[in-house]
Image 1 (cartoon, rainbow, N blue to C red):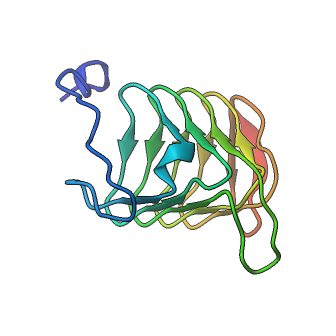
Image 2 (image 1 turned 135 degrees about the vertical axis):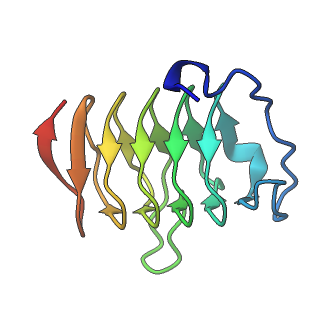
Amino acid sequence: MSENNRFDSWKAPQIVDGEPTKYNWVVQNIDGLELGYKTDIGAFSYINAKFGVVIEDYVQIGSHCSIYSLSTIDDKTGQVHLKKNCKVGSHSTILPDVTIGENSVIGAHSLVLTDIPDNVVAFGVPAKVVRSL
């Protein structure tokens, strides 16, 4: 299947607070979630949207990712914003008050603590920009 028609039959998933979707990812505090058009969220991912999570159109999130708008470790809170067409690699974690820029790519197993600009590749623990796209 080509990238252009990958989402041809996409339908917004039914999301129930704290319960796995049919694709086996979970959202807590769904009132804080804004889910864009033709998004792809991998199995076993977790989203805590208590302080807002915005996932724009065409965003891809790999399996086993965690997105937190609230950190109980340090009590940090803030909206997480994944801009249009960004991609987050499998097993990555995004902490509160972070924006990932349009078209940017986050490598697998990354820990995103700070904003990532548009059109870059970033990865690591913590994630750092390694090149422009």
